[in-house]
Image (cartoon, rainbow, N blue to C red; front, side, top):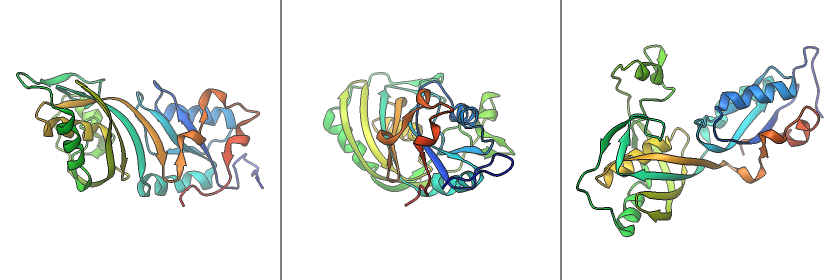
Length: 240
């Protein structure tokens, strides 16, 4: 049963599965849920970029927000991504400036694309995007990158458990992948392009699953109200 403290803070573990809309930051979603619930302790597990959509786990209440770190770090995730071949951008997605364009390179065949995707299955090292929230010199990497400072991020081990081609019509390829926590799909798109010898960046991105939870279980943010939000709250732990 749900309990409230004198300050209005929840005394139970509650999470809301939200289908994040395009154009909003993950923090924007948290702010909106905070307004709707009236609860000051609200957070999320696993940031989605503004142009990405899909499953965002939002914790409501102090006990819930304390568990978000473990959820973000220890759970595999499933994404559907559109990758644009033929050029690289400084942010590794559609928002960035073009840094390289492929010239005189023939479009890869479907077989070449499938073989390349398969090469990424397993454990490997990945260099995160320069425009990321990773801390360097006490600041987030994207803050330094926006000032034009050259930064070198350390590679990290990530795992791609499964990846398969959904559609391909040059220059766009679409794939679905199961990956470990900490995997940047933007960086994966970039590296796929480099392995194909022509560069690439991430177009659209949608997160389908976090652990055992699916976006099909999620509520549209616009459907949440002060009167109904508790109907969508899970009063149990998320990590299984």
